Length: 255
Image 1 (cartoon, rainbow, N blue to C red):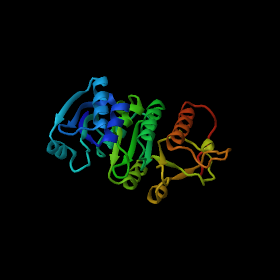
Image 2: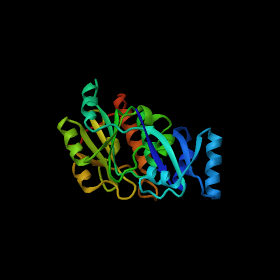
Image 3: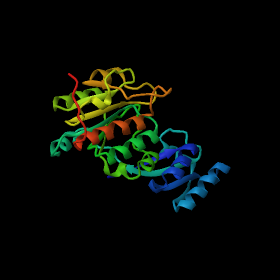
Image 4: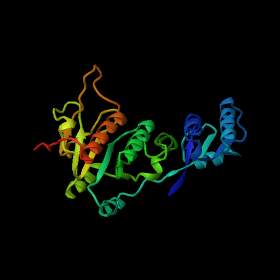
């Protein structure tokens, strides 16, 4: 299922046209405004075969819902995030142990798109993120995800900490990543019902999210950098889980 939503502002519209044009239905430009930046947007739309319409300022104002549209607004179709209440039925239908990816306040669309792409490739059953302070599905996210946003269930929840409690009640082991942890990812059992929890770009895992993890693990860092990009770290963790779930290697679950 897809929903249609407005993207307002010259920079945002330009990004949508350049990196997610296949999700743009039409471009609205203010009828009386003369601006070389609007002309650039019109050219991008024509090159992509996107319908171009000139509208009155009040029409743009109304569609933008108070956002500063600067005379440009794109209507985009993106997959709708799934409702929180649908997650339980998805988990009930699984025939094997669930593998979930929980993203705590990931705000960069390129990071979310990369996480979705890797998660889909690694066999993740669902990606879960909070509604607030998280990017959500956008044309840029869908472009970077390369089709994964349309096929991988993506849930946005009102309260991530509460949702984590519900997952734990189902017997799902929640493992978060933290640079200061002495527990090594590569000696941790990732074969059972599992939710991998990754922190956002700015501050990592929030306190309530961290407290609800059953275990915090670290990734070996042998260079001078202190941490990895969240999408890279997610890829490392997910593919270690995939390796273990295919029966390779000896693992243990820390007590």
